[in-house]
Image (cartoon, rainbow over all chains, first blue to last red; front, top):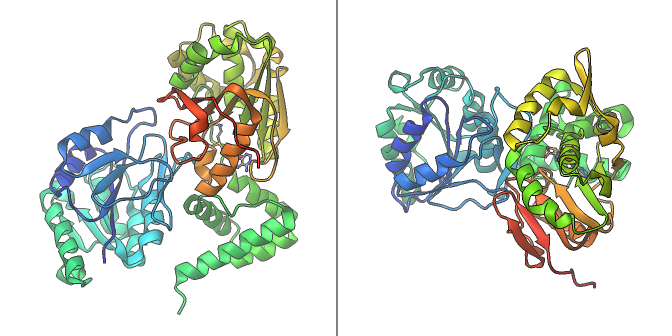
Length: 199
Length: 280
Ligand SMILES: C[S@@+](CC[C@H](N)C(=O)[O-])C[C@H]1O[C@@H](n2cnc3c(N)ncnc32)[C@H](O)[C@@H]1O
């Protein structure tokens, strides 16, 4: 059973996130958590912007908020976003990880622990290697990994690094990712956990 | 069979229990995900394979415990971090505080003191510092020492100057410190307004009769149970009409004390105490 999706993006991520999220219906039954690299002093514009463009509810993550289905939570600028065992969200202002705060690895590693096999991790466009180690943890705990096809990414470095470090169950163009996610969900409804077999 | 995850969590529970009984520090109600991350870093740095190996080490080696304590206390901070917050204190809160002959301010979780000196500078610029006493507390003794000395790397001061500009400071930031080589020292007229002391929010009690409590980016490290304890502690430590200032991503929304406060500035997370806890 898939329970949640975590997405990491950096350079070019705004457009990429919009493509992926706007392809999901408002009743999409999983929770989504997102780290997009931004400057720590940026305002909270990203969540509002995406919310306006997507059927899914998109909001900035609040500390100790429970993750709800059909909702995407965006890490606030300047805070790491983590998932707790009870599937609530925590924020922290720890030192930067991979020169980033929020860091994709921090989200992915904590979510991997919380959801194990129930997690889908997605690495999108970006110009640094954040997310690679996190995606590796997701796979090590039985979760599913999707990486944007570097050939289609605005910045290929991040998806390429993820593929090198962690590999992936699916390498896909942005436009294909919503359908992939829906397929995972339909497998949920069928009770199987076999999306990997099709990778 | 027990999954690796569950076994690790059991090990961490035992480690925290050992720390609590041996040293009196209770981390069991810290947010688990980031706590685990920090423990894992220390474990790897110390070259230990397991959390139970850390337990053994921590029980018999006080220096290792000290290192662990430092690792558990994240002292990331800045002067005039969130410039809009300081502007709101200056423009909305200080005018009300000025109606009192004398005012007490508590910075809980002050780390290395940057936030405290920012507040002192702001109050100085409002010609109010002479009527204020600032109490600054933390449970990290090394951070408190650094805070009391008020010495910071020059390059950080340069970054803080940019925050000060964004805040809209009325003076010249460089007037608040003296420079020697690659470091700056906060001037005495600011330092002598602050009393630094040890206070652990998990175990220590009320810190009385405050007009303003500033506790920013500390509560995010606590779970809801511990947050609630600390919120009650703050409520009891505040005078009626006093102000509670939280970090930009912290709120009273999930707390039982919410009805005892009105919102003074929603965006900057400033709340005004209008009710009392019932004494049981
Ligand atoms: C991220 S810093 C926040 C510093 C500053 N308030 C700011 O916002 O820039 C968190 C601080 O909380 C302190 N802290 C954590 N647990 C505490 C406790 N139980 N009692 C007192 N202070 C604590 C840490 O030592 C650290 O200095």
